[in-house]
Length: 327
Length: 167
Image (cartoon, rainbow over all chains, first blue to last red; front, side, top):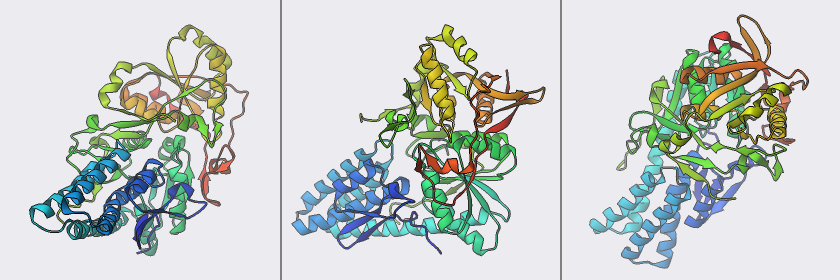
């Protein structure tokens, strides 16, 4: 299967983690070298990688720290304390993201090792690597499932970026001789749709057209789109989900115009419903300034909610990926 | 840059139904008419690709003493979902008994307003600044390329909004 660079954007190599700097795409393909948890926190806070890339960085940060702990020959008790400290640092790197669901798993493995009188390093390393491998397999499986719901002549709308999966599914469709076109919203203010999605879809040979976020209703009303496929950053126990700002209005429009709305989800029962999802309100300068210049002249405030929360009743189907702790 | 804020659903209750949302480029007399509403909260949409609507509306609102709040074209849904919007004004170019041709992005607001039972009012667009967009305008933001070279773009500047959405 042809792979998008965004599908697995962080890879351990030698004694460091190579993290794809998504802020440079499409102009440059460059990797940031991360050597420890502080470097991991930095790439997350600075949004050098997002969404799935951040989860990869979080998990691999433990593998980096295990290597460092082994070099320092720390005692098992100190290793346990360090893993818990690393977990806390990663949890705080992005407050609205459920990193604690993942760091908690790794921290529990460390405790499990101690309780079973096993060495922490090989136990946690083996489990973390196995977990990553399992996630990779499930995501590749989901790429096939996405391709399966795409029919010949489909005209798909997508928003933000789903870390390679849609582009890879589109490549499968092309191989299967399905004629498919994809509309990608530019996804202000970070332009993930323009910079990442349009780029990787083009890279993998898909027919992609870029639209402004304000054109989505026109696409649907004029029959230019017959299917919506988006990702999700966070799922609730009742099926509600959070995703990049702009997703809610697309979901409402899809319902209004009778267009199927498919979501790639990571089921979780940690949050009950959308009312419990915290929303990051980002600094107004992210709208009012662009590379040091004012976007709007005059006196103007700005409001930038980072995420939309979408009720489950607007979803046609959830294409889920589920990875269990003990897989 | 100061820290970002984290808010929960309940935190928005204090500002329920407080926002007047403006979309498109309005005639100066419409904006001047808002002088009687200085204490209210006005949000304006960016209006990609040119941001012309935001520029002009901001200038005209400032002239009458209003400091608007800017949002991107994809953020209106959030405001409706949190029950923050009380009224929507969209600027139309032409209108008949079926509906209006209005600034692109208007239909999104109309559908959201219908779902959340918020009144939508169409007012005439300012005919003077000609809003047009070349397809490749979308590949740039403030002169900087933001999309891959050669990418196809679709950049409508108007759309039809049926009268069924209006108050």
